[in-house]
Length: 230
Image (cartoon, rainbow, N blue to C red):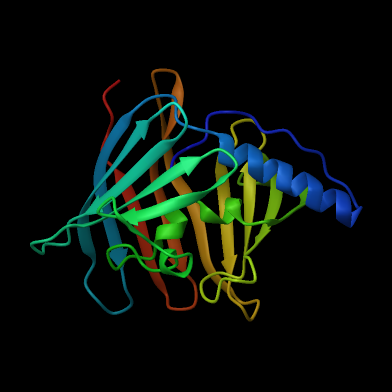
């Protein structure tokens, strides 16, 4: 997951067909955004479970750009002999490809599983919900002091587990997610996602910390990145 670095454009409408059309266009813009350069980040996953000690797991993410695509790789070391790792290959206007070991391709439902025992699912880190066909731009509103477009994403009928829909508040100037809420198949709020800290490096805003809270289980995971050199 990365902080988007480009503005997004969309209008809001009361016409359902237009709202879906504009929602798909906004989601396409977000999927087409790509990092500007190769990057490696280190940090930690801070997992807080009810009535259990806080757990900290070292974390590494890397971005590698190619002409036609870019790949994000994620690795966590929970203290076992074998680190937990997977990668996501992103291509414009093409579903993301999740794989383990570079060869084993994961099914859609397999991406809706926890990463290293945290509240982050693989699909969360890959922002998979922006690739779903069901997208609707509902409104424009202020969230956390910033002007946002509100995008509702609904999972395909072929998916059998995970979120049923995700509502995202997208910053109109940067394209970054200001907040997101994920709902289960019963329509109940399951998770809340929010960036909790950003920093400006070489004139660009970089994500420094983000958090996912499972409101049903009471667990919470914070992904804290190590400081980047200026």
